[in-house]
Length: 173
Image 1 (tube, rainbow, N blue to C red):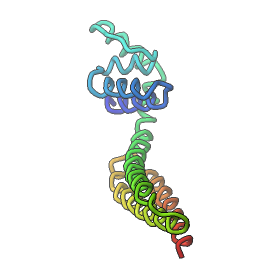
Image 2: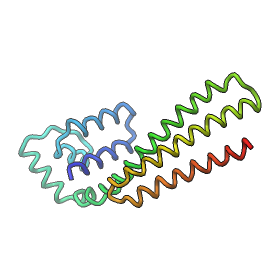
Image 3: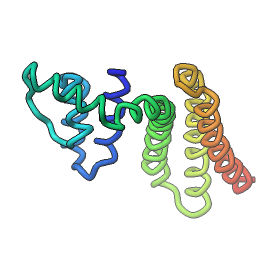
Image 4: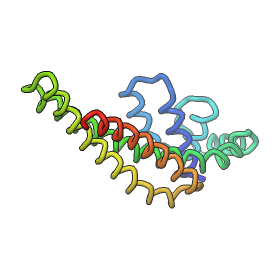
């Protein structure tokens, strides 16, 4: 349950309107420094506090009585699936971003149809790398609470990437 609490708190931080720097600081706090009672207070009250032993007992009792205790158990599994899919997808997009950036630099020397062919060729390589990363990432789904759903989500992303790849292929013919 400790891991689920940290995952849930991290997901809430990521969905918040905090700045990118503040989110990174909060995630680092949750991952490295926060005690479980501190995370419970963060989930219940949205505050970071320092607690002594007596306050920890009160927090644990409040948390046990709240609906959050059941929600953490129920949502923890779903978040695990979402986090695995998000991590694999982020890795895939990182690859395609690097390839497209390279395409921009490489294809600057061309113009007209030659430039379009160059960009299409580089995008094709990027999409192939993305599909490969997403496909290999499906093996991580076995670690999630719902491996079928995880694989289905990744298969949907692979399908979309393949459609884009087909669109480029028909354009270059």
